[in-house]
Image 1 (cartoon, rainbow, N blue to C red):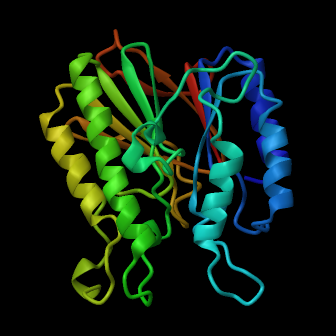
Image 2 (cartoon, rainbow, N blue to C red):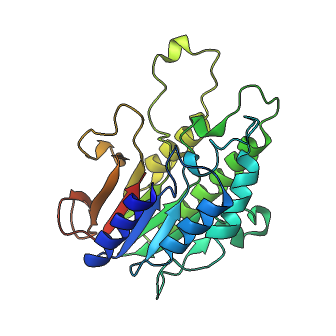
Length: 273
């Protein structure tokens, strides 16, 4: 998200009666992965008056490269973790208390995965970059991908167990990539490793056991960014693609629909680059 777009989204959110705002990414694809930009973007996020939570996108770290063209993804991921996820509350004056995966010693570095409960619904962020989940094809052992795969599985399990224990009506997952659909032309992609296959399988299995609804909100893929926003349901598992700008979502545990894409009044808002 460019600075003007993010500033406009924050101003709009502050003017509305929103319970919280999720920024699905902190920078646009054409912007540099520099400390200066990260610091400027953090300063802007700190001006928010409403509860604002950051969910990482591929543009923030996974697509970053140095001057020599080589990937700087791991270094940039460590940097955004240091800058944007040091607090146990959302960005704003009061702050929603967040439970971070880093509270578990084994996954202490995964500060970006957070959860919070509101209105009988569990909300959670998941570091799932849209560039095939940052699976690197020529890297030999994909240590970052493989380690994060284990961490994400643990995080999804913890979110599910907590929601079951509290008998919550729904779970909302915020991420960058869409893990749910099968790759296009999968029969022709035998040489291409699907980076989302394990996450897709695990979310689908959790949804099959969960008595409520699970909604995955992700950034829209190229070519689908301008499509009208709509929740696509497969039984109790739904997905909602987020195009450029902002989207408002009503979450009402007393409603049979539970989640509704809203035009005006809403309880939660989500923004993307």
